[in-house]
Image (cartoon, rainbow, N blue to C red; front, side):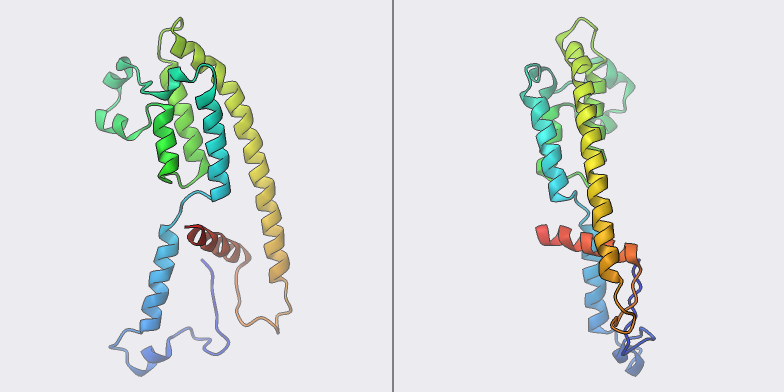
Length: 197
């Protein structure tokens, strides 16, 4: 969490709180509301979402996609799983598509876990079935795409961190606030999420 220290009020105590401890500072309330709002909005980065969308569309448009689009959950699995738990999880690629549309994923790895789950459901079918054969062909290409995307995102994040560090290396006399580097970068990333909406 970032530590912001004002040069005018280093104690961090609101002036109105000093005057009247019984009344709550409106300024402090607003600050807390904004803070909660930023923490609440933890959706996936728009760029990552679009790249996940492209990966999903490649899976859905492929020649064998029909086998994985609808409910892939084999009846044998329903007996093993708790039914309330099974209803929450995606049962086909269309379920994953609707979760992406609704911005239900906060991180890209959640999307990938759901795709892997659907593929694991498809592997429960008999080996000679079309669903099983499709599920054995798809994972290799999907995993290669995922690995490439993950590496790209890591490089971009490293570049962003370098830029943030350069921006924070300002002469201490010119700075009016003291900030932890990682917290500042996280703060900017969260603000980007709220602006995108």
